[in-house]
Image 1 (cartoon, one colour):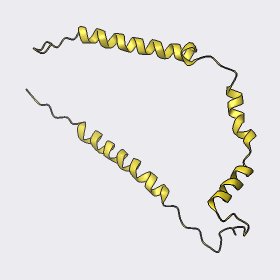
Image 2 (tube, one colour):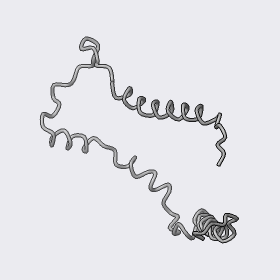
Image 3 (tube, rainbow, N blue to C red):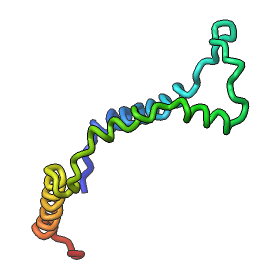
Image 4 (tube, helix red, strand yellow):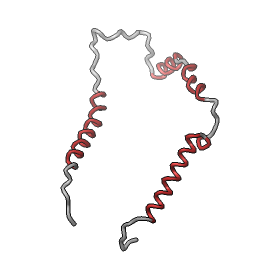
Length: 116
């Protein structure tokens, strides 16, 4: 068996290592938020709730529930199941085509080995 030098393997491996390093380093750098300066930080109201339960109930009371329901109301109205929609039919067709090609390529494989 002859081995050919893969001149493209090292640059691709280097690029993948750089991409992995950036993927790992970016969230770590974003997590290190700078601490605010006490002189320029906004003053926290003295009437802020002291317990977790009080803080949660105050936050829930201040929420606008109508704004949270607006996207559901806009997207509602279409009660058709996914596989009966155009996207669902396209997904089924792509799946069937992929499985069919897999079966065809397995039977028409040009590799002849003792295992097959």
